[in-house]
Length: 477
Image (cartoon, rainbow, N blue to C red):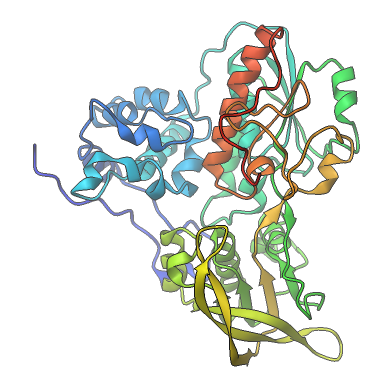
């Protein structure tokens, strides 16, 4: 075996500079860095890296083509399985998926698959995205509800297979969580726009400002001539702690805060006069990726001090290690083993502080993580004037107002066979966060891809048993 060099680090903005701007933090590989990293790939005969990818990207093939200088071949291999590679190369947790399975990682650092994916995708965008060959028209019409990662993937795959697809989106811009939830410094809006345009170039009709359930019901969509429906509306209903003071002015859900910042472009103030008030001392509750995004946005919008409050330790934090490190470098403070018990307010109803209690770890709970246990007498207060609750999300019940026949779990998620996306109502498939609860972009894409394959098979052969109990229970059941 040739000598294996160290992993090629991707250049980033200086922490002291980037903490006050919304430009992309990671700057991308140069051609020389990409080639050097591609040469580290072992080109395994049994590429286990693909096993770790929810959409089964042809990883060795696209890296080999890059290494050989055949960039269009590299693009072809990458997009054979992935309609949104420029997005995945930026926000997917490769370190726990494809890179975790990389054979090279057993003795050395794994190949930087995600960074190479980003490089190839950005190269294609620079050259001009090409549309692939499409299958002949099947004459079948499909409605895809929700233009997030699951819906975009499902719509793109179905269009490639020759079906006529209409993509319904409730908001005024497509992308779902990609556009309203993930900040500009992690995922530029221009990248999302380019990926959406690619899906549209496949023949997908995009209808914005269309709230299915209000403007048209599922039954009305079937009456309009749609042969199948995919439901990929995500999980946009924020969760709260139900502690005293959560109704004070200055308390945001992370969903509202990030939507105002991203989709409504508060980060471009005063060019866009978006109503959002940023405190000088901000507390963010939670330690997932959404919490990191909220904390880092607050800093960039002008907060003097941003504190992340999390009831477990850093080891249990759900956020990517990369995002935790970026936040720490930018000066975000972390209060681990700490939980809020109330939010303190002024006489006029504004946040003025937060009361916290120290925790210690006990026995594991249902998630498998140690359960935080309050330490009596450890209460203390911090002066803050804004609080962001980043505690997770659930599917919005409004989605189900016209589809009572869709069975839901006790957590409010749609019951669907995660192997193929089928719900218990014939001709309706579902996937992504609406089925699993809040998860990753790539897992939602995987669900959209599996559903599209099954929808294609069903539309070509509808005389088959509809519901078969899955081999494993759906998530949250």
